[in-house]
Image (cartoon, rainbow, N blue to C red):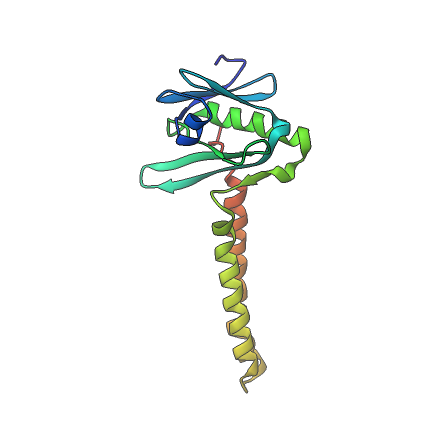
Length: 180
């Protein structure tokens, strides 16, 4: 890794070991528009055109944000998961942004996914929306004055809007890159 080629150190995982990369930690860098995952023995070079999907995100814990990148290749079914060794590494963000840009240029932005998982990205807004619809249905059937029927629905609609805004804001921030 050099100043011209940003890179970071990632934890060695079972998938990387099965791919032929050996060592306690691996160096991840961009070189010639390919992502290189190089260990003490062996290396994996990922061409952006070979990428089926890339999920970039983080999970929050008591010790801080744990960044992760999950790469699924077209040529192999087993995903590669990269966990940077340090808690806050600017080179992780630069490397992943460069790789994401190369993936987009080689085939489209639809292969880039953000967040730790798609399920948790949509769970809050969907559940809130279902509760709001159920509440509106129950309240609309009651024999009350019109403003009494819509006041609880308005509260539900505001909560749904705030939750949806929060989910979109969080998804927008979960690019996998620490703020630079």
